[in-house]
Image 1 (cartoon, rainbow, N blue to C red):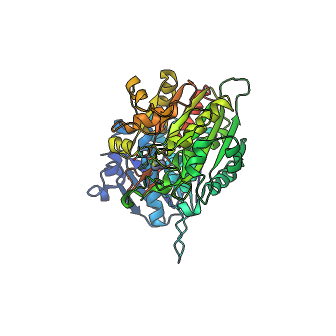
Image 2: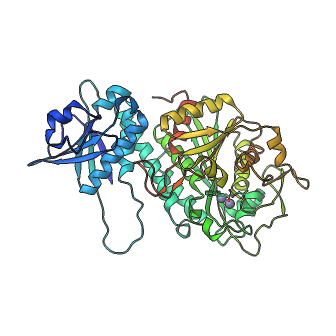
Image 3: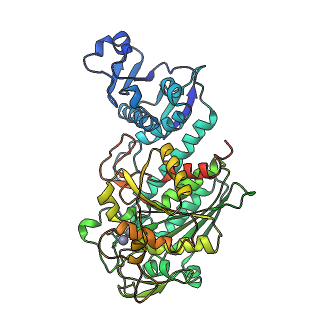
Length: 480
Ligand code: BES
Ligand code: ZN
Ligand code: ZN
């Protein structure tokens, strides 16, 4: 556990100093290390003193350091503190505040919290715990506001929740376990929460969600979250997140080599749950209704088969051609529910939806689609603030035609190629013409090895920051 607050006084025993590349202070204050530390980006060096230690963190070139780099630099500092077992550390933050303003505080807090993150694996034997109190230094010229600290803390809390959920093994997080974990997490925020259980979903005729998960021993469910931060507004942002707690592929079974990360197929739902919590805790002036369909995708005697035809919520018929294309099925019921029952004015869906997007963009850029430039514009500025990268993928009528079926309204896969586009467009069919954004985080939700200093192998927390900032910007920057 780490705690993060601000201070006017440097901690006498341990202090982290951030230095630009070839900073003249390196020669002046620390001449003895000039040979081994030059301030390169993410370089660290510990200077032991008689009764105190200084951690030097290299920041590289000033002009190359933005908010994203602040998050990485503070993560690197936190990781070093963890290595050293440091329990209290103050950190110089003035240079970043001067250059980037208070937004740097939020990123610094996130970096500090994520840099030493580790999922609590269930290993027997000695448990290594690490607690640290971080103190961000403020000065007369660069004060730190409570709001900026709070935003960082809440975003961190949300991101950690999302990571923990996604890292949890599938046998410890069945759909209902996931729903209860979300309910527990949302408790301390002003959010109305409802869990629709399987019998209710059947009665409501959610055939797509029930078709994917209904034959599993561990039945599907759907969590609905409602946050009313702007009662005077008629706008209501609908968020749908894919919550497949394990994706075997069903009868279109995945190969053993593709089953590595199947427990992480609920990262979209985790990101939405986390972002709504963050938005509500920070009292954003916006209305949000989130719908999280949760389900396994397995094989049993009653599982769906290719060739089956089902009716999605709201009435469109769907020909199942591949049982491994299950994410779009559970999300089409969620999107239709948001539009029909909750009257949302916008729809955003987020999902680990296609392997194709990871093939195209790798682990650091996610795919995005939208049918509304204004709505997508907000996403773009939100992504600039969160530091996540999305590529907007174009589409045309020819792609819409690819998912038309001869035996039903739609089929759940297109022909070969452009699998990411047809998957997204399938969900769009259920959004009732509302402005729509689709985020495919199949490549970014999980990393085999960390790329950035604020990552750990496993869940990344993809989507949390961007959805939170999207809600903040959509609500006219909220109340702050
Ligand atoms: N959850 C997977 C997509 C995925 C693949 C996520 C790899 C993360 C890593 C999704 O349900 C799936 O299986 N998609 C298929 C679609 C295909 C059958 C049209 C895919 O991408 O192969
Ligand atoms: Zn699948
Ligand atoms: Zn899946």
